[in-house]
Image 1 (cartoon, helix red, strand yellow):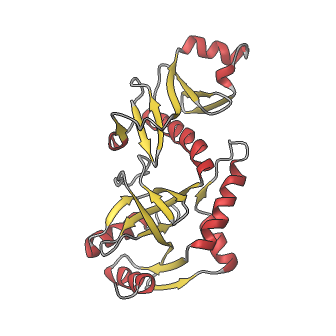
Image 2 (cartoon, helix red, strand yellow; image 1 turned 120 degrees about the vertical axis):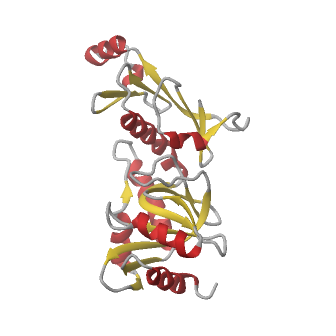
Image 3 (cartoon, one colour; image 1 turned 90 degrees about the horizontal axis):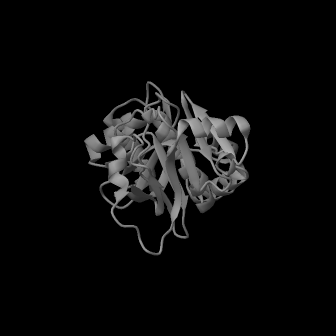
Length: 267
């Protein structure tokens, strides 16, 4: 099966169990000008364990990862990943595929951010809501959908890509506990860092506050040589290009109105 996410093509062995969300990103035919960035396959358990233990002829096992009972072997260039038969826990498989994807995407000026992403209804602009699990990222996205008919592109994990004209927020199959994931992108207008409060207020962040608020919500590919440096370079560009706001809020329509007026003015 071939998939396309943000113009990155990859293939997954049909034997592997993946979330139904991947169906939205499956393609029948790839663009002939594009190549497969990476391929995730199945490896026979006996041969795999033998290779891990002996480390003889281990071209595939340059990198070895484990999640629950699943073991993932990756070649030196992150072109081929093999998951040992027979477990295939769907959450583990999805995490391995995400790891492969980010290993390629980070070199194309992508950042993986713990956030939700919406496309507001009156124009072609996106808003990202950042924060740790349970802070209300999905709730804010749902409020915008309810009161402003915004499209929820992703509810928990967004890939943001630097382009010559804008930062594009992309939907992907990875969406945490949120049910929302759409195969589309939107130019991001601003990032909104969430805080729960009894009153609604919003302010723009500057300097060190801005850096800290955004960087603490980025996933860094620490397993990848040079991955941190690539992320920090893109992050520096992001912090220069986009405004960042702190929204202290209740889960109500007034929080939507306040954010809309601050960021978009009178659309």
